[in-house]
Length: 171
Ligand SMILES: CC(C)(COP(=O)(O)OP(=O)(O)OC[C@H]1O[C@@H](n2cnc3c(N)ncnc32)[C@H](O)[C@@H]1OP(=O)(O)O)[C@@H](O)C(=O)NCCC(=O)NCCS
Image 1: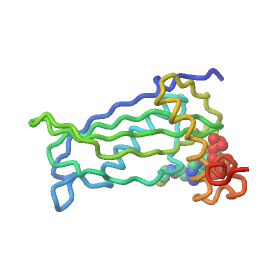
Image 2 (image 1 turned 45 degrees about the vertical axis):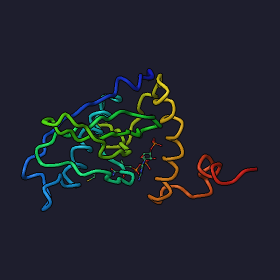
Image 3 (image 1 turned 180 degrees about the horizontal axis):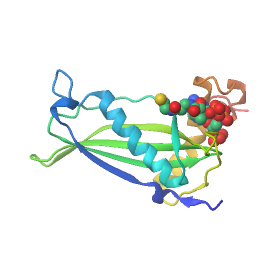
Image 4 (image 1 turned 120 degrees about the horizontal axis):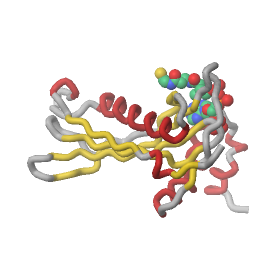
């Protein structure tokens, strides 16, 4: 299977915050934003592997700034690393007040997707080719993040997380 460039997985989604998307403070509800992020990230993963994918996990998300009613929401999603059947996708989210021409960061997050075959079993995905400095940095950190989320998900023993342990223990 031929490796593919990270740039090829880029998805840019823009939405507008309507009254039905808001909480009682008139800001975008976190759940609605996570729903849009899930769609953008799934499209990015599918673009990379050209196969149907399911969300395997979502890392912790901190909302830095609320996005206000009537503002635009910009979501950028790109695959950071492909493993066997899974792919990590990095998301960046901004709000934009178009009347004031003011753009502000809302949050960043990592989602993990698994590609499935017609029998709904995990299937291999193409490896990722990284080119820019940011892509290389995200690629390098992806193994540690994967080990941490697999430990938290009960899928890996902490003792097996070699890359992660190396951060804390020196020989
Ligand atoms: C995700 C899922 C396909 C994994 O299936 P599984 O039987 O555990 O498969 P495996 O143990 O062989 O793991 C397959 C891949 O999933 C990854 N994976 C499993 N659990 C994971 C988790 N909690 N976080 C991140 N990746 C995970 C594994 O690391 C593995 O990746 P790799 O092939 O790149 O090494 C399965 O748990 C599933 O279908 N979950 C429900 C998905 C879903 O419905 N999402 C929408 C939520 S409503």
